Length: 190
Length: 363
Image (cartoon, rainbow over all chains, first blue to last red):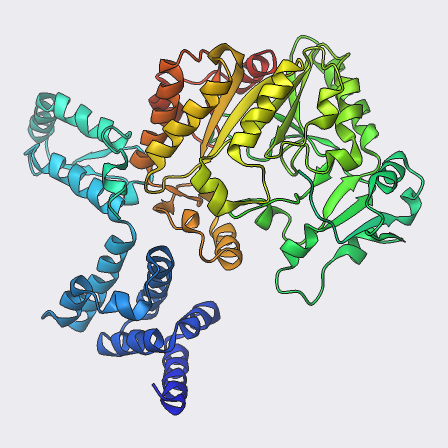
């Protein structure tokens, strides 16, 4: 990119940041990316019409992935997995949300694998629709929340019987939340 | 090991105090000593890219006007605490660990301060003893400073050990990442002094614990003070969940148990890497390429970023189980974790803080 093109890109980033009320600290971090990376994120932000929160999250995630994996932001945004999200159909808000989710998964691979495993265990319980099992957000605690929605005592009793019948499987999920089987096998892969 | 200093600032009123005279006599002649009415103000680094780092090379000797003794600042009703009491004889640290909470806690106080009136703390300790003669307290100097950094210069440990030697219901904990133990080896602690080391795998040391002694040097120093009559303990804190951490923590414990027998360890503690968002920003700004700051930390209910729970607990259990299998029967605790996590890791509810404090103090 020529000097004038680079200056033009920076000026467009500043304009977009002003329009979106992007915090100064995040604008500074965006402008601290290498030239190609600044331009790549600007292109994505424009194409997906990213909102302020999405831009803030993307800058945080891209900055940390780049530092951890010793890659440029431009290289990350050109990875197949990310490009698939950018190129797929759907509304721009949906694609924008999906991009942040994909970046989050890229940043937290072991957390994603652990969450997927727990969700798979919950799915196999085959509980009545009135019972919901909620994992702690980002697995930030070891507490499993079990919700029962009931409009009558029969519903409630049915839910309780179903839960009692799944006692061992639920115990297994609680054990997984407490770190059973969460050794470095997955963690070493990234 | 020794740490480099750019200058020493002494408050004019303290020019003739024992600490200032001790430091002046031990200091290399090339390091200037500046006597000034406002040593803290004079030490404040200006026009430097990293004032916090610059402050670590400036030693300030000044009076402390606040109490010296306090409850551990990490304590909270939401955590199962260890009953540790903190004696603040110094603040800041010449070492520079990328994850260190001092980057937030003393961000506006960028110099290594040692308090000239530290002997006043002994009166506070005596009042504590008289207030609860049936209890046994563990009192440490390693919370806002490393207990032994600069000890060859200040010789604080000598006065401290002399005081604690004769207090039956007090145990002094000197917590360090150095191998600066020369003064300790000349003294008899009479069973009242425990030296503890924070231990991390080599990968963490190389990446994040700048200017500290290597883990192997810390273990060697532990052996030496043990042989000189001190008790020893180890803090695996922060435990960091990086790729390869399981293997590295296992090796670290093997290395430790090659040098120390299981019964020679007074206690050990575990604590996960935890950072407030402000601390993380400061740490990332100062150490942008440290991979240890880029693990899978998520916001916990207290607002701190911690490794997500199953992974963190798996690492705690790996370390606790490794010690148990090796025959280490010493008490153990978790720092800044709730009782439920303690129960998951050690298989039983934690004792009350005061009881655990007693147990650790007399371990």
